[in-house]
Image 1: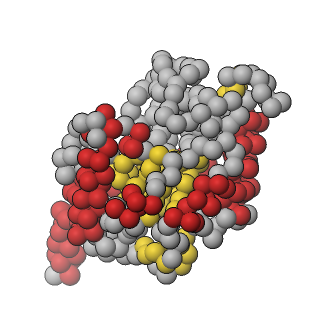
Image 2: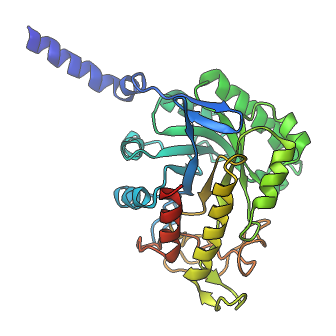
Image 3: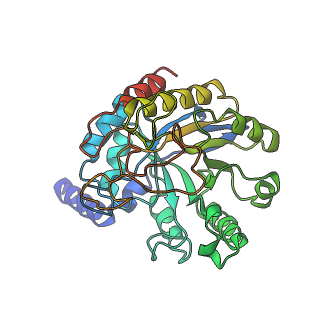
Amino acid sequence: MKLKYSLFLIFIISILGWNFYNCCEEINVEINERNFLVNNERYFIKGVCYDPVPLGYKKRSFDKIDQDLKLMVEAGVNTIRVYSPIDDISILDKIDKVGIKIIVGFGYNQEGYYDILSGSFKNYIIKYKNHNAILLWELGNEYNYHPEWFEGDINNWYKALNDAAYKIKQIDNSRPVTTAHGEIPNKILIEKLDNIDAWGINVYRWDDPSDLLEEWKNISEKPLYLSEAGSDSYMTIEKYGYSKGENQLAQADANEKILDVVFNNSDIVSGVLIFQFVDGLWKAGNPDKQDIGGWAPNSIGVPYDGAPNEEFWGIVDIERNKKKTFEVIKNKYNNN
């Protein structure tokens, strides 16, 4: 009889699948002044942006997730930021198992893939809201640079953003809702978007974001994290003693100075995500090879040539070989 009950229980669990798992995990992320608290302990983001698109492809794949997580753990990474949700419990579980958390990003129009326009983002939150790996819900990625995506009026985005944040809170009150804004928003916008609990800012102010942090201190008491910061490993010109061409030293030096500013101002900023973990060979041309070029809005502040070579931003290359900056990040993240 006991055997029959055991088999029946296994059968029920297999049918319920993720829903059973979903009900049994507990995580609570709160805000205390400028800080994130995870289960009542301060959580400082030491992160990387993660969009692992394989060589020769244009869409991400998690085929190398085990190797990537091993490298991230070595580097002291505790958070990854993804630009669209990971709808694979096995991947989420692997990330959780190594002690890394995820900032889950939702796009506005992703052809119905858990996006804001279709409203399907709510389905993802319902499905995964209790997963231990998820740290924050993040809406959009520097959309303020693209009013053309919103009928020429960026206020259409801001309304959709604030409304989506409200809807998330009705489903899940265990995590803050954030957005990744291009550069620093003004005080009026921060107050207008009252459903946004904390702000991520994509910032490229050479190798010193300290002015931005001081600006934030004067306009808002909400938590701030640098949702993108860093430098690429290609110099389009010779400048400041760094030679033209692939230059991993320039990237390493810039990231070291940026991270020093972040950790020295931990009373204002609640963390940083270096852009990015692995080179993106799909961005500027032929995805089968590493191309020179690429452009991103408002990125002339990229050290040390003012040119964001889009396929050279990784802290590891496409084959997962460590760049010089890997050791810099490893030292900073593990010792702060």
